[in-house]
Image (cartoon, rainbow, N blue to C red; front, side, top):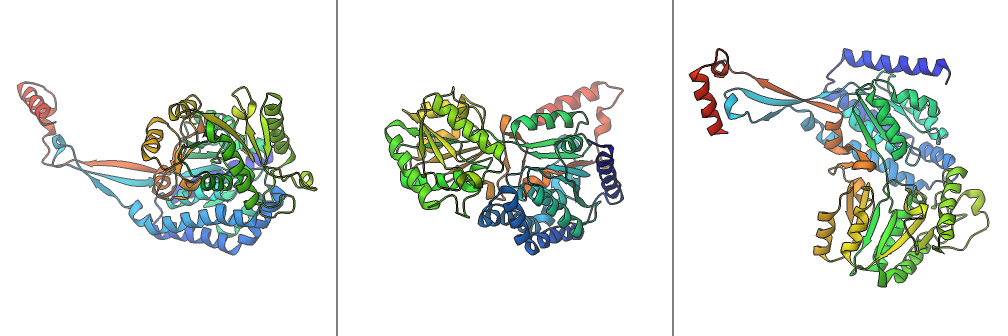
Length: 472
């Protein structure tokens, strides 16, 4: 990496630090104005945004961009605007009996400069959704989008520059070398969305500055099909969640655990559902392309490895002319899978879904628990006792019951991973507090008896200690 981009990055970061030092506690009006500008940026440029993202992918459904990106961010802005005054307010809290008549309260304060590293798969949502909450909390924001979506990244940089001063919110574009320099900066909070492997590197870089870091990662999110499940309904919802963005979604169903005696019926239901959603592939504007040839080759390699190790391959569609040139990968179901296959070890991130049979619910739960904790878990069925057992005996970042993906769209639910699938959570009030220091304050009363517990110690201190122990 040349010295010029590095110097420009440092200069921009320092400008944001200086701007924050001049206004450490922005007013409600200032924060709402920043959210308003972000809202105008989106509503006035939605078509340009969709075009840029589609260009980067080769084809990206405009409806998917509208639903899964623009709508999510606009919904976050609306929710934040509605509740921001309450979130910012100082909260009185109870004071411990032994410290009465003192008083205690908590005041949310901005942290300073927040860095956001966003990925390519949902380049708008995963850059701006955390920015909404960081700005609402009163911070300055610096965003590094993915180099794999260059058209969108350049457009985002231009639009942010048009709507914000550089020391308020800015975007820096560049390759992986710039990203490495970015995460080495002493941010007051660093927010990263991406793979678990890169997340480890980001965490180590941030540790050098003791920078708090939120890692939104991924993993293999399971679906558990209960024996009493309506297979047609479940197949439709799972196919829709899996094939959104051609499976290039961190919370997409990664594999399905299915009662052994219903496995083939479920596979056929999935094929029917996929064909209803996408009657054709190559010329279908609703079906998104794989982001680039390298990722397409990786996905095909997972399928080939599984087949070589004994998996049955069940494509949902016949191969169509023109698919290869458009990177419209045929959705594939994999049966007879085992853990020796790469597809059962790596996050898939594409339109490939392994189906694994189980004999009883304990076996399915045991399989989930024998693997790294996933970012999402999905359960389909009617048996509430089975549902509650799955919720009680598994751990995951989030859960949607009888559907997929929808927990991510709930502003009142925190979104985040656990263990290898991530650390920290955001969305709504959770995100506001993530990017705030909830500063505790205790105000001592002039009538305090604290002096009774100060040296020189004697019998009075002994009596006070005994009394306090009885009162706690």
